[in-house]
Image 1 (cartoon, rainbow, N blue to C red):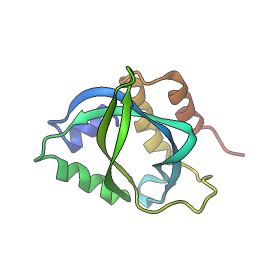
Image 2: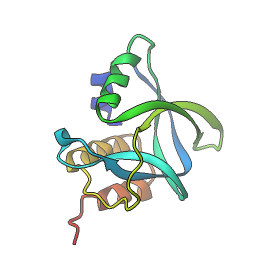
Image 3: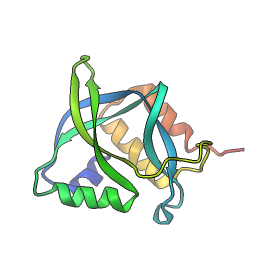
Length: 141
């Protein structure tokens, strides 16, 4: 998540570490007219990895963050993420409520991808992850 968006949603959130979800990928399957394109969902993918930043969010601020995610079609769940040192952590995250129809080829919201790129660069996520997000902004034939 971009630092600015996290600060708006949960100003007391504190960065903890970078982590990834092995055997998961992004699918642009969440329809949301407000963003002008599809939003990402984290889905099982045996050949994929999803990178992100892990934060602690004060209990009093979690409902506001949860409301934003729910409005975008996601629900809270837990997962096991791995930090850059290989240590596993139980984390709370939001995933889409509805699975895609199977083709996964939808036009992502350029504005949302830009926010993801902002956060990915800010937190120095792996270059391959950033390059993959940049590819989502390329014109589709």
